[in-house]
Length: 171
Image 1 (cartoon, rainbow, N blue to C red):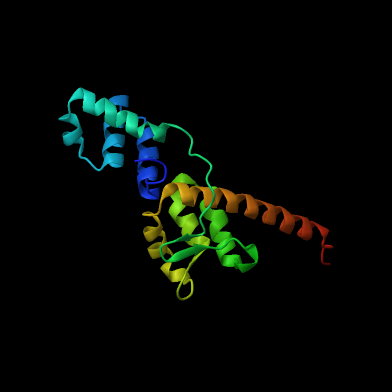
Image 2 (image 1 turned 135 degrees about the vertical axis):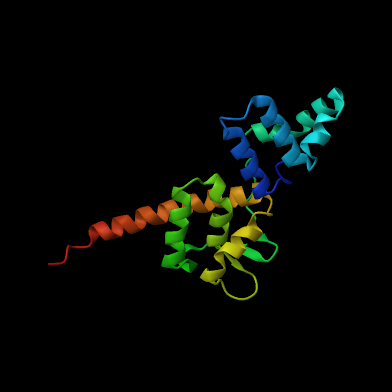
């Protein structure tokens, strides 16, 4: 297990566990090991201490920042839209909405908002279905693509704001 094999859904679950103030550190550790290894908590509790420490070392990457990797523009049956001219106003508003909330817990929604199916057209009514499918995508590639696209969209927002500011007020 490494940054290239963890899914969006696993990463979101790990972050929720890390942020849980009601869970003690040992329970957090056990649950994170369970999520990332695919083993149950009772299976992990039954491990020999040496094997458990080896598993913790193998999964320790999750406590560090994700590495910078080249964005991937395709995953399974979807392709990210990196040309902002191809984003309509509704999707741009949805992107800003999901970005304004808990970004980690909205990664799958952000990916669904700024991607399109390779076959057929994007249908807004199917957004939740697209987002559910994106939960199984490799976290690191979605993350790196979204970092790039967020920076691009931030520049677009600033450019739009500048253009609006140049417009004379209507009487």
